[in-house]
Length: 215
Image (cartoon, rainbow, N blue to C red):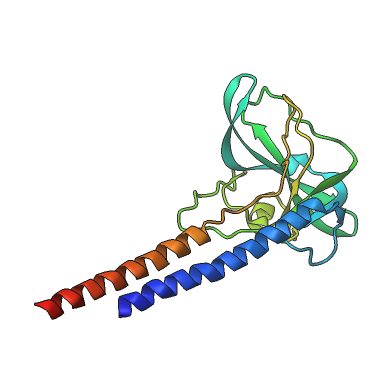
């Protein structure tokens, strides 16, 4: 009986998780369909916003590691995060997109005041299996705005990273995001699995009772 309750409980928990995940995906889809608007206080995660300021490329860092197909074949790269200084407001860390690690590749660095369109990506904490960050080398694997800001002299960064969105041009870097991220939604299959195991357990139990009664 205890195992049956556990299996049913796990299946029910996955149903609740399914409802929660569907809500998250619906909000992301709505945000992606909506036009970008001015950044306001308390902007919701994944909201598309417009931000104006000046990039500080002397304080740029690399985040993560990703291999992409380029004209020269598979190429190792990372995401370029650059502080965007704003007048009368906190500095925002902007993920400008993927760039190759090959120093011979040209990376666009616009001067002056720019307006960036992108979505709000909440900061993350370091997990148990997260690779160690190299603050001195400005290479990070955890998207922590406070830690990244501290490494490059940004004392009070916004508590999120703005992921730039825009058209992708072959051979031009950075390559910005094209769509908002969509987390996987496997909760329905998990729920079915747990409930199926519960049904199997009931069938096995009644088969055992029937056999014991006959004997």
